[in-house]
Length: 116
Length: 115
Image 1 (cartoon, chains in turn green, cyan):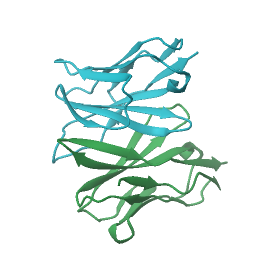
Image 2 (cartoon, rainbow over the protein chains, first blue to last red):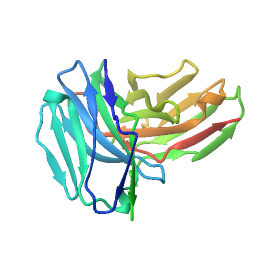
Image 3 (cartoon, rainbow over the protein chains, first blue to last red):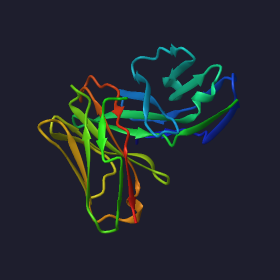
Image 4 (cartoon, rainbow over the protein chains, first blue to last red):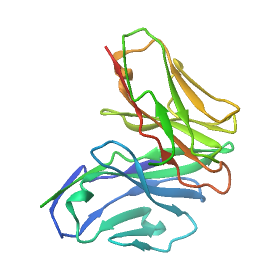
């Protein structure tokens, strides 16, 4: 069955610290997609990254980096030199194909507090 | 701004009532998805439409229904509302449905309060 686990409910760091948000997923499919979304206090959901199951290359985008490891079914997200503006809830999500469409499961989210 | 629009932003209604939430996808996106976000259930996938056809179904209650119209906008109908239906309802859109899956872009959401 599909499942996404974000074990960290809340993380609090001081500005400029590095922080890693964990995501562990379960799926029976060999083709699937993983995502990270950010939900700032304003409430909108902002897309951060997509990863296909057949592409295990890690990715870096500015202060953000993602580590995808199929062997451990993990897709972790690291923010380097965190800033107050990074304070938000971060969601990891898994999409699998289903009868011509895609069903997406979100993790419970990790609330990140970055203190000045 | 994701390019996905949702109306209304806020909706307050009473138990037993019926409401309709509307979503317009980004220009060129054929797929529309509906999600419910509540404190106790988190973000839950409800349903996906692609070019007018239902393509995937999640934890959508029988009291809820959706459709996608020829101009690609979508409506989510919630009926016989209960207090527990109070939530933030998101619509998202993506370019395709099928092998070449792309990320979903989310609208600002409709906050539904059932009193």
